[in-house]
Length: 399
Image 1 (cartoon, helix red, strand yellow):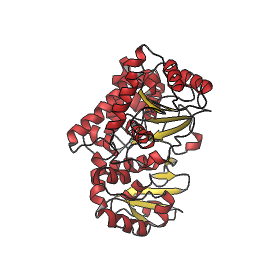
Image 2: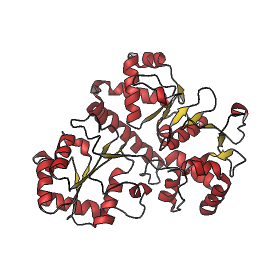
Image 3: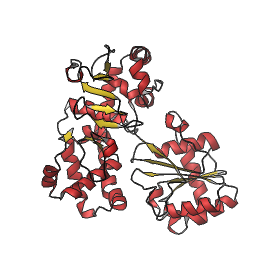
């Protein structure tokens, strides 16, 4: 245990508290079982360590933080460690990278049965299964999905300017006053927005764009080569096909799906292609859109495919299409807390079955959504709203 205590002090004392993401205040850390899932690199570890530092300080006592791929767990079980921690008065156990420990769900379930007074918070890949793991934790655990930085968070994270979080309903109802407020705070949001589209989604940009894209590629390599074989049953010999699919989508998004064409290009059968697409969506590497979400079945063909976020597109695409980049941004930001559907018949997107959005440049007209109730244009390169034509960057204020 001394080894774990020493590592706890090191990890917690070194975490920066300069910028803390809002999500830390929305997680119910006091619940008995809390799970935080998210793609590699979005900030799960940093947020967990920050919470421990601000709540318990840097020394282990009531709380203990463990990285589950630590050498300690090669000859010690999670159950034995947790039992000793509980006997020492431990109240809150934090388990990071939980998916790297075999049978984690079984042992967490047993711990919850043995010590219902001890809180357990675990974090892991967006691909980990809560419902269909070795032990079904779905009725016990409160699960959160963590995403990369919104445009609003990017401004705070990299430029030190705090902007309030606005619900989508607020953005649509009061765009003029919100736009005035944001312009007072940051001066020129459009300039920052253009930076965000290139380098703002993952919280590890350090000023070097090439190194940033290299790190994104490393994230992709790890997810496809390590996590997808482990969680999705993909044969390691076929991970090259998955990467080829991503590269194809990067240069063809927004891709109006022709599964036969994609299957032929990859030399795979259609069901395998659909399975790979579903897994890439779960891994937060792509965004699958359907024209009717309520009727989606497991192996249904999506209507449109985007890469998950604009930075992924910039990292992988040989020639970036500005229209694709804009739509990728909208699909990414609105997918947090909202149901996003492909506007197959009218508009680019249908949100929560109510609002219709058309995305374009400053000259985008209402011709395609004329007479459609609750319809709006999200226009790039405009400073202020013009009726129901709103600056595109405003969608980045909703989380």
